[in-house]
Image: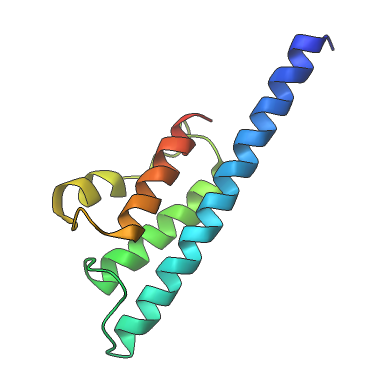
Length: 104
């Protein structure tokens, strides 16, 4: 393998690791938000229903497993842009995940 291929492989590996880290971080945030809502506590952010949050969590798990926007592309980004509070920290993190995932 030549140097250019090695560099491309290292770059791809860094991007994979970055996406995995972002997904794991936002999955933790979503889990906390879902649990707070199920307990009847006000969540930290204004976000849609528990069902939608669980659906997004499921898509993130698939993204983490597949790591290929060609094989699986999430649908939640449009929902976030269209209906979520623009000041939602979870929304920002989710959109950042999608942006980095597209680069894979």
